[in-house]
Length: 439
Image 1: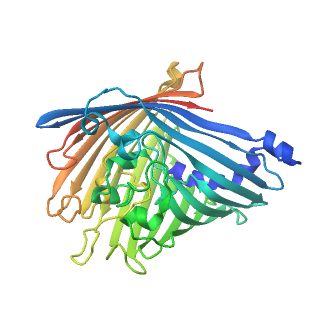
Image 2 (image 1 turned 180 degrees about the vertical axis):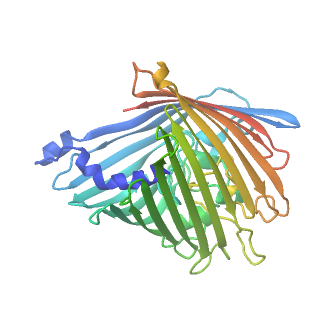
Image 3 (image 1 turned 90 degrees about the horizontal axis):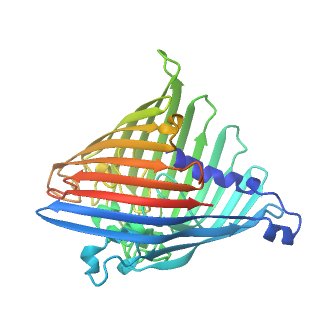
């Protein structure tokens, strides 16, 4: 969750990171280039009766430029691209290729994903246009090749001591490549992608209401307000409220606290709690919505070793509720218990557990961080994915990140997840190899 809170707070300091320009020429020539060049390979083998394998390779990423601030104003633009490498020749694309690296129809595509103006005056920052957002219930969710992006206006202020206030209005979204795996399904609606994401793929920015619920559900967008407070040593408090016009209101609360272990001060402890409440508003385009989610996490770190255990529970829906569980159609995935792929913790009547451990081999002379985890989802029959069926889904996984000393801008990642009963009888083994060159 640190990434979620810091990503929007960073908006307030964007103009401070570049040297202020005194002329238009200086603003244009003294700005910053940035981006990521990415190679992504994914391989998934289903073990459901007949063994089915699908795999894909893509090359692309994103690259852009932001001018130096002139009288507090800077302008930025960034292009995004994913390009399919033909590794299957004439093979059937729908069964041979994994769709999560591409756009609609497994196509390559390139588009202008960010185009914004950013203005900073004293402790207030205003950013408007196409941009990347990372907030608890609407975010980039960069789980595959390209992230979600938004058309939005974001105002942030830090005048109050130890406090960041944020007000945002989001009108449109283009769904990242991960959305291609959900195909406008009920599974997607509670896993970060709505019933209209196919229209919003391949760089097409669509109305937030239509992304959530499909064509014909255009709305006035999503208005969000947040307060983040860090005035107590070791404690961070944040509160977010999202008003999705004519759909729902979502309240998100989170508290994080860190302290030295009383038995051994070298052991750093941390605890977190999160809560989500959703209810229908306005024209109730999603029908009746009434849902609660609670999560908690306890962790510890000692030198190079860290780990945590987390639990979450989502309430069971009432017979009159159209969508039980937590609706999250705009890339918001803040849950402590989510797996690398399995995001069933938002299903109605579901309890989830997760344990994870990481080790940093830096002190042993190797720039490698290794992580292992296990997650379990006890799903009640009130869920909307397999309505009327209760079952237990499990996921375990590994995550390795290697950044060579000689190439500190390059990261090599190897990720793997192994699922059992994602849906009853649906299992798979999945491996990903990713190379990121950051500049």
